[in-house]
Image (cartoon, rainbow, N blue to C red; front, side):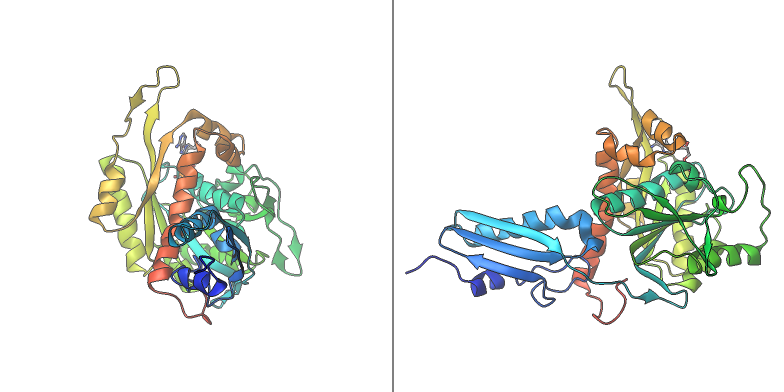
Length: 365
Ligand SMILES: Nc1ncnc2c1ncn2[C@@H]1O[C@H](COP(=O)(O)OP(=O)(O)O)[C@@H](O)[C@H]1O
Ligand SMILES: [Mg+2]
């Protein structure tokens, strides 16, 4: 009796593997590109989209592991991931081509919301996803500063040409960034009335040449529900990430922010705890400056995913001030925390899709 598995057996062994972007079986979506079987080896090529770029290596590992345990008699199992093209559809009336729109909010300012929003965008882009970053914090736009961009965007046939940031890593293209900070001279106070605010945000969304995106990450202004409402009316948001610090007052504000997102029907994708602790570089002693673990408990109480914690690290502040937030990903002390947040975020979206696959003809939300 031959022990060489055939392609059909390999395909059957992978029947339960779903595409992280759509939640549909890889085999059904033409994503099992090739299966080569011999007595000593199984080689499988799988097509995955840039939307799940941050999950590619983990997905490859899981498929290999599953084939190894299913076919223990075959000494060599290898899985190769290749890009699978699936363009985004236009969202809502606003016409942005994006697969996911994720708002990053907080109950109050100064908790590191812009740092986390920018890091999520950079982390996903560095993994190979197509990402845009919109700074909707019109009161205190700090994204230009965090990514070291200055100047005024050009206008091309009535559309705004976003400023471009090179995120580094495995990013294949620069990341479009748009912020009111590019439109208003630095240091100048802007007094916004409600309708103007609404108009400014919708214009930055609608009139920017974003190009096709896997993710549009939006840095929200702290607190108020107006912008969340504006956004939720303008386009279907995938959901919101809430950033907070560990102390009780901040958690109270975060709880309010979560209630606000829920009120305008924006799903809460998870909570990030920033400034969770400080490890003294001289003594390696850990200090819980604002307390610790509060966000994790709050997330559990409110039944929302906890996406991870980020310690206070002096280089994170220095990189931010130097306009080099992406350097956090070259720093072995900061990178694991930030990458874990990005991976959990996309992993949770994948898990949600796997349990409830979106219809193939509809935008993947
Ligand atoms: N984990 C961290 N470690 C060190 N400094 C941080 C950290 N997170 C944020 N910061 C710094 O704190 C300040 C406020 O962060 P920012 O992201 O602008 O907050 P927010 O958008 O909530 O107002 C910035 O100077 C930033 O560099
Ligand atoms: Mg900010």
